[in-house]
Image (cartoon, rainbow, N blue to C red):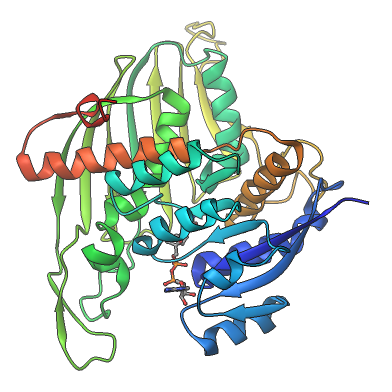
Length: 384
Ligand SMILES: NC(=O)c1ccc[n+]([C@@H]2O[C@H](COP(=O)([O-])OP(=O)(O)OC[C@H]3O[C@@H](n4cnc5c(N)ncnc54)[C@H](O)[C@@H]3O)[C@@H](O)[C@H]2O)c1
């Protein structure tokens, strides 16, 4: 019989709900499971939302103070799904309490906080994984294999974008995502972690960045509609980046991209091949093999649509590899990776160190947009 793994979930909004559903259904997706995930406690900001979350997912109890989760001996994994300004203290307290920590992106509000978190995680034996769920798309996993095999050759250039349209309506009330003191930034810190991590994961580390940010709607109604509040974060950020290996490229993050839904796109051009992927069409990875023979007629050069669909490695057993894939499945694969790391004492991937690397790029980008100059990422590494 596998041992139980007690889970304490903090936050039950968009992210918390999908995580709770994921833990509940892991045993249907993976067989065997190395541990038995159990939803023990859920913490939200109020008694009412906590009671609702408990009922919805069958937690044993709810609370409005996360420290009640940390006190429990039957909880060994803390899952942090709260607004960004709460990550630092909750993560550090959880590590101090000897709990494994699974935390949503971004790791923290800024680089200083992220460094503090990583300092504590390095000093502890607990496992810590950040949620970069788009690493767990079969097409991205296949892209990683191709990049590692050298199928792209020398990287010439790349284009990455993560585009939403949810804040175009100027009457949409303010949320924590539009407040610097709660989010740490705007589109860049919200959407940027996914696309920055994906490109570093596939292509290697960035070296330097130059950024422009823009706020389009500067005032919005308060939540109750009774007041008007200032928006002090970016709606759009456009970054130019240089890779350590010499490649150059761009990343755009926007919450004002008219007509988009959840459009995370990458294009990579290399000396031996090119990759194209779009999250809105997640069943395929497009790959161009430049080493294929070129003939005036009869050649086979051209982009190939690789069918990555739902091809997860064992012990994934469900749904079938031919079934179309989607957002919740990437979270489930990410959660499986973490519980496996805990059960088998493996290094968690993506790690908090990966979260820190992303946070450094974001910090450099905000600095660049303020100062109007290129920022060398090495200048932001602490000299200790
Ligand atoms: N990887 C992804 O796909 C993804 C998607 C959405 C959000 N996120 C990340 O998840 C985090 C949460 O975002 P969200 O969209 O779920 O936010 P949300 O506003 O929908 O929900 C926030 C939750 O946190 C709870 N909360 C707030 N203050 C609290 C406190 N002091 N103690 C306990 N609980 C508290 C609220 O009750 C609520 O349940 C953010 O860091 C965000 O960047 C990631």
